[in-house]
Image (tube, rainbow, N blue to C red; front, side):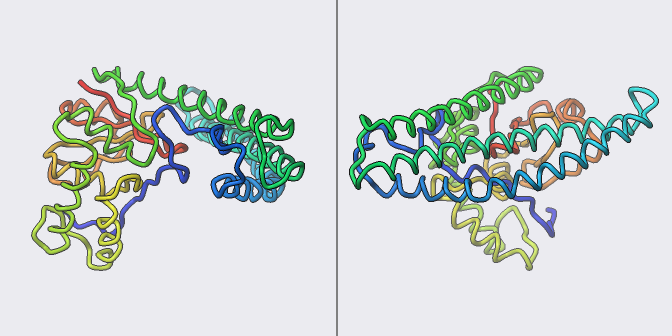
Length: 307
């Protein structure tokens, strides 16, 4: 059994989303009531609006630096296998991600402005028939549509990766239970709640020194808190979730990202395995029976497929 000094933590989105994606921050069923949910959405949107210009300035500067770095890398590249070209491609991908984040920030700021105008134009009771509220709802729906389309593109990319390894994509919920939902659907022997309970019970045994995993003393308090959260739905999966799942289900778990870069390889006893410089194809060739998950690092979402 390996003792890990550090744990990489993967968090899911701050906003809980049901399967089929989240609804607009303004509820269509309760648009006529100035409720706490609406107020919270407005406050969060206003924070985005206030900080948008500062983030944009920082990213413009970073984009300029990236552009110069890409130019230098391309200037020194001699063939398709040249490391300089690989660096340029990596920098280009980073620049693309930053551009997408800036667009997302601007969309949220636009929603904030529309909702604020809706509030400023009415009283404590606002109805969908109010023109300002209609505008706010339209902006929210548009932002929802952008996120939904982006998520669908990523699901299709994940499905293509899974198909390479003879797995059929299964949709997982977007409410903090995606990892457990995926395992429940591909193993078909336990529900989300049952899987969480099994991981919690094994985690408690590990903390008592009677389980399959050993924790470094310096990290025991961190793991204790994470294990307490295991039995509660909608708590986002961390690496401890993956390790306990592997040992309670007695299966190997492999996690890659949407670029097919291997992130984690976990043995059937919950141990983290070393995989230096191995491609996903090499790892899956070594462990074809493993459960494969594709992790969207930007959306903090686990996707998988059944054999």
